[in-house]
Amino acid sequence: MIRVTDLRKSFGDVKAVQGVSFNADDGKITGLLGPNGAGKSTTLRTLYTVLKPDSGTATIDGVDVVTDSLAARARIGSLPHGSGLYPHLTARENIAYYARLYEMPPDTIDAAVQTVIDQLDINDFADRRTKGFSQGQRTKVSLARALVHGPQNILLDEPSNGLDVMATRSLRERIRELKAAGKCVLFSSHVMQEVAALCDEIVIIAAGQVALHDTTDGIRRATGCDDLEEAFVKAIGMVEPVS
Amino acid sequence: MKTIRTVFLKEVKDNFRDRRTLVSALLMGPLFGPILFAFVINLSVKQSLSSADEALDLPVIGSDYAPNLMTYLESNNITIVDGPPTRDDAINSVGNGEHDVVLVIPETFGEHLSEMTPATVEVITDQANTQAERETRRATRTLRAYNQELAAMRLTARGVNPVIMRPLNVDEVDVSTPSGRSAILLGMLSYFFIFALLTGGMNLAIDATAGERERGSLEPLLCLPVKRDHLIYGKIFATCLFMAISLSLSLICFHFTLKFMPLQELGMTPNFGSLVVLMAFLLLVPFALVGASLMTLVASFTKSFKEAQTWVSVVLLAPTMPILVVSILMVRPSTALMFIPSLSQHLLLVGLIKNEALNWLHVVVSVGGTLAIGAVLTWICARLYRREGLLG
Image (cartoon, rainbow over all chains, first blue to last red; front, side, top):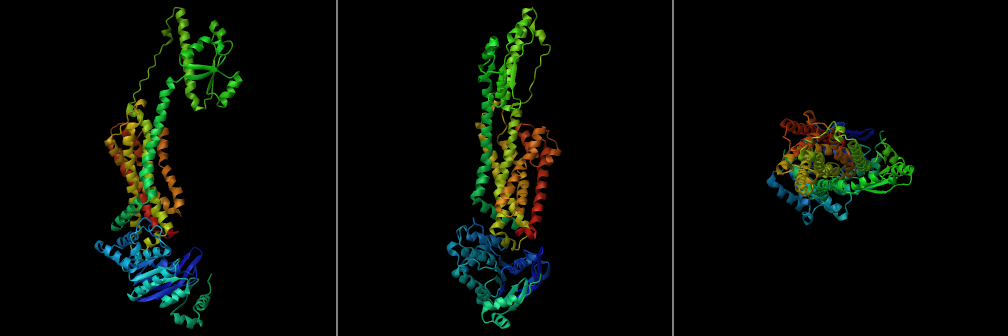
């Protein structure tokens, strides 16, 4: 469960996030939707503690990401934007490296790695070095790496970027499985259709602020648009850029 | 501790599979030194052995005016060749490097000789041309010998023992041992070893920082529930390991190749047996921590792999500075100098090769001081890794 309260973050003069608040509950998929530069990545980066917020708080299962960042990080599995792998290691070794860094008991690591490899269907290329992997294969391995320790909260930053239709579909399925397992999934995207197809709750962010936070139907009602893309555009327009 | 070990093992495995790292650690560093050194040695042996025996071609203007002198020069293995037509031409030809040295004998030479007044001969040379120096020295030395011989003959003709012209007999006693002489040239060695050590870890230091950021694998790594300090320690220690491997290979390589270098012909018997190799390794290896942390520090500031390579290459040159300064100033080892990394290793290694007894205080200060500086640099790296801006 993730709680974000009045989060603010600036880089110099650029106010990336200006008071974002939302909740993401267990057993639900929450989509962070917004145009490029809206503050999605900054919000997620604050959650997985790479960035420190200027003000506001965020908690993961009640653990504060600023004051107890190590414990907060232990509760999440994250797929940052453009995640890279180690090209000289095989997919399995890449995943196992993270399992060791999560300090999983050494005798459980091999089994845990094999479990995520099965779950994400990467057996075919699990023992190949990741150099030359396709974007789809890379995303799967990155996701497996983030899930190997069975985290309760999963943060995905634009996971479907660069994926083809088949890869996107299989990624969606994995995300639904995580939801079914009672996990809290928070993922960002700038594609309305994708978010609508997958999410229980949508948080629309524009200009560093939350424009709307609702279910798909709720957003249709609030904007008065039946067409989701229209609704998205209208929701973004609700936020007055603060300079 | 566990994190440090995990990161260390992963970086080692990863880089053992990276051809770039392997080439620089296991090939470049260890081979570059011995090959360059063998080249320099062979060149200097060739030069020093050949110069005395080789005939020197000496262009002479007015050789007809001094037939006896010409005979004397030729008997000293100097071949007389026709010089430029005039003295001015000679000056020009030496100035533009056509000739290294030209001997000018004026028309009045014979006249002065018979009158027993000093007969002038001119040796035209360019003092700035270091290549000409040896030939010039040989020509003037032979002329001076001829001068002595004539003087002795004149004295003998007057019934005076020419020995009275030598009130002093200057005898130089060279106390340098063969090992000591080799130390001058072998002093170069310490830089080769430090160079080998640094190149061994260079690629890993860049890959683990700038490379990781460029690949996009740094951000997920920082999302893990591990302390950033531990990540950087693991990386620095892995770099140290590669540096140590490269250093030991380089030492072993020299141990074997020195046997095939004609050092005895230069009057050198370098002390580079197995025990010295081991001692040299132990004296030099603390520098790995300084090198690894310094490279990591430099690479952490850069934006890309390429940029990091440029700046880290500068680190390769940095350790030459103290060695160079000390070589020029001919400083003797002192305890204070042992606090300076690279310099202390250089001085200790030169002493080792010269077969001098180790000064244990110096060893302790060198090892301790170098490790302390390395620890401080490592700590600064860890501080740097805590920054938010690290991800660029």
